[in-house]
Image 1 (cartoon, rainbow, N blue to C red):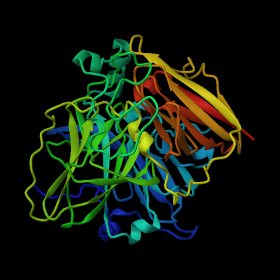
Image 2: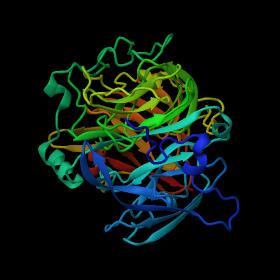
Image 3: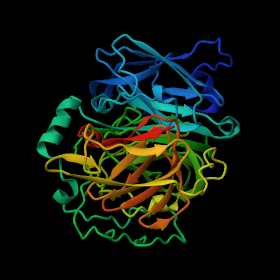
Length: 499
């Protein structure tokens, strides 16, 4: 197999000149360009036309240097209207990228300018039109820290998608009209895979109502949960399947910073480092106290930064395992001359459900070096209980019993410390994303923690998660499930901040 570094996804300090976009230091220099367009990729030997976000070098995504402003001219080269959301970033509300809130969609041929100070870390950008995101209109947005430049390590991005050869509208129609695919109950799988957290070190971890042995969470009552309601044709890592994976050249015994982005529309993944112990050092762009392990999970829209020390020469597969299923994708890190093994796209056994007992989330602690540490404990000014509901038949997903358009805004005043408690009363998990803010996970299933700083938190079936945030700019900010069919059917509300 030929070694390749497709796109900018094998970025490292040694190749920064070819993968990073031009840096600028004065207001007079030109902004970066980004184009929403169509492109052709090869999936298991078949050509497929998908969407993409191309930079001025003709590659997917953006890489910003430390201290570089997000000054970007976005052009819509599609034959339909679009709008791009800078996921996890906190731009002015007018630049947030939600249709008509407050800016309209970009018309074909239109260009719109953006200018704000970005948060550092691993982020991504995507259309806020669900069918377009399902058509792969998404790309990495990497904002490097000063230590990324000085550290003796190679940076690699693994960008995950679920993919169908059929048009997204047809896929969505099958789901919404057919009531979805009851993955776990159809297969007779248990609610919890006892080995799901086996790859993560969690000594000393004990939380109320759960153990590492993986019981059914309180209130589950033995009912089977639904995991995957769409059967996709393929699962992609950096636009490729395991029939032709990206093979990234690495140094012998080198250190890797692996930035993993789950850009899938409706799939959670376990990241398996193949027995090589990794250190989880950041989630959703924000540093955490390192957690060692060989398997880490992430829901839709979440990100993981893993630091991996390679052991000598060889080929080192990094796999993404579809939650509750045998399908998998991934990349291969390989030293010069190392034979690259062929890896089947189906594993021998199905992976477990993702973090059903919130064990992984409960392990995470925000690092003191995080710039977001102002989210330290302080009196709570306002609390909201947010009920997550829905069903497979009829296929309808709600927040506080309502869908978008009939929703009741969640209110706050700028500067208030706000607690949002997500109570999931449905049998599917929901990755909940809040625009324009970061938050800290402070309680999981009744157990108080000083958890990670995030922008997207996963709420399993019959679970409760509380996050703390400081209400920001007075504006209407979207709060929604990042499972695209759930969002498509109305699982969105607004966090309305007043002055």
